[in-house]
Image (cartoon, rainbow over all chains, first blue to last red; front, side, top):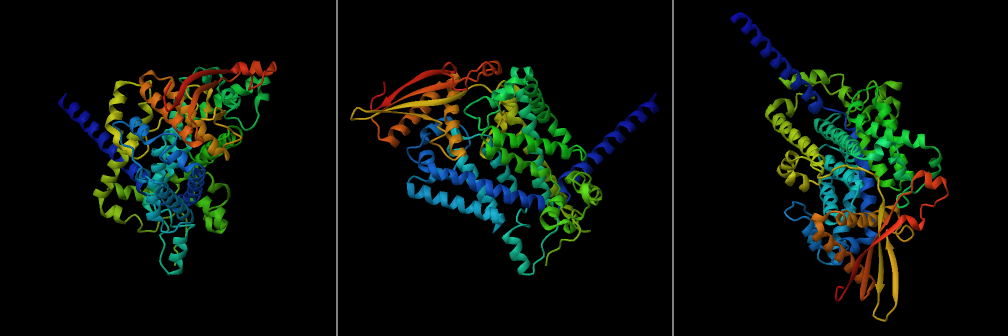
Length: 347
Length: 198
């Protein structure tokens, strides 16, 4: 009896020890294995362009949204944020001159982020400005601002200026060594990936509360909404089964994204569906910026190998053909040395 | 000199970096990562309808979520796509003439992002209008919109109404109804605002 108890306890201890060891190895491999920063750097360029455009459009209504007589006065914002923790550097701007100066500084920051000059400092400033604009006018925000916030947040984490940047060009000219891989680049990309999974999962779960997502006509609610519509798809009224299929596909895609995106074989298909879904939002639902921002964030799942192949040519990609898309695609299984790396880190 | 040889293959000693030499750094970052991921999930979980557990958890993470601009529910077109909302306004000037306007206005608000900003203003007002617990904020926002319009157009008074635009069913469109059919609109007067609010 005692021997059996000892055996059972020993088995349990071994299970816990092996389990925690394996978990630590996987955890370290997932978060702390160095990666090629090309994906992060490409996202910096695209996100920089999106941030610049998003904020450049505010120029047309700067006083109307952020001035003293704005749509939402400071007092109303304070009332809405009662007991909250929102902050904004735009609250320091009490005159049109101060507001315009801050706005020019913000636009300059986004240009510098895009071209990758003084990237580490500029990426922090870009986040500060992105959040500041969002917090100053909460009533005018939508999904685009959430994705802009996500991108600017994680661009601060990694060395997003190591490639495709003026910083990299200057370093090369000065004869400096540029890191070919980086742990913080991996952290930034992983955070983007996990955040995208959370977004899609809750986008899908929240739809399960709505009747029309079950009856299959929610898709119609989007395309027949005149305030959103930019492409007339109401001819689908005569094809209800197509409306049903597109409705259910949307929910299925959003719910399964957080699982299927991690598998190297299903990942390209998931990304392909994401491209179609978000291009649909771009062209039919009148939200080109939101659709493109989602695609930029989805780029976190594209292999750095593929990106370098596309930008520098196949010779620099270090991979061949379809392998770069699926076999060696994103980071979970992209490093031949990363398993060893993870084990070493787990010690 | 650029070191860009084999992609994705970390240099042999790459992991023997600060991250391997300082396990405490990895542990601190790991704790931060776990807390960050929990916060990301708590934000949408705490959106109504929700449980007291998620509401309490949200209160713990609230400073981080709001401070970092992460306090989002990600309920895109959910639970239902629903009707859209516009704000119609009448500007009354001192000389007696009246002008009408509406936002969002696709003709007036170009490019599309600018239109969408104004669209979100009217949707924001509707979200407050349908929530009785935020009546005070609804009144304050309505007043703020009115004051902005009055100031921008140098009007004496402004009258606001919230217009709801219902989405017709596929069967209605098949039978010839248009998306802008008058029967699809409903209007809720919000009041007249000026030097003396009526």
